[in-house]
Image (cartoon, rainbow, N blue to C red; front, side, top):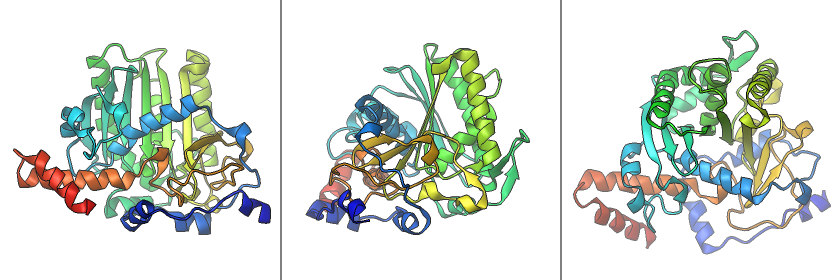
Length: 365
């Protein structure tokens, strides 16, 4: 134990970090990590490091993932004003992967008003489907509905709350995907992404519509799943069925036709939920672990563990970790700035830029 403590150096908080943590309003599930997550006996080290290219790619997709949380300002407005909103102090500062992207559709689900959108990235020729994580109390109730629901495939059981949320957005997602392929003929890859509950819903979308034979997805299309901080979506049988579908898709379209990345993070307890003793399992057999600006491959035999000791010096950028600090970004900062933008637009939509900057200056004092 003494050795493990040495592997995790403590960092004194800077004044900026103290202010950042004092400003937290969202749950970061660090307490869940302490009471529900168990540390893997396997220590991650340099030999498990993912390459920088993958880290950068997932961090870029994460920008689209985080944007799905906005309920305050319509996504259409954000996409129409990307160039301005990516300037310093504005909400999308640092979200450079969004540059040049085109909104295809935005939707709110019939169940708990779950938000998401579909966008096209011309630079990468990707169609991105992003689903929000939990952002309201009524959505949190769906998270707690852990009773089993038999999946329509009859191959296993799925979390009943996630299933209901997915059914509420399914027609809108399918319409958005169809519209994306109709409007943009050069799409080479479909990216399905979500954070937290949105990640679990993304898995269900893959099971229900994307990986099964259908007329929605063009032949030979590359598919990529990027799931950040996902809870467990179903049981072991459904996980096996998911892997069977991936195998069939790869046999038909090539080994590189499907890629999946489930990213867990230091001090994030959400991937430990619902607990193993209830029969829940993750679907990805080789997940990733985000720890202080580094990304590690988790060996398959340790895939269900949520917490890992890391044999490496840590960056002190976000020393406490947690559910809202993936990809080297403070997600609450984005949502806080979007809230200021909403108030500025409501006050005077003709001078909203200066009204917004006034709020920034006010909160920076």
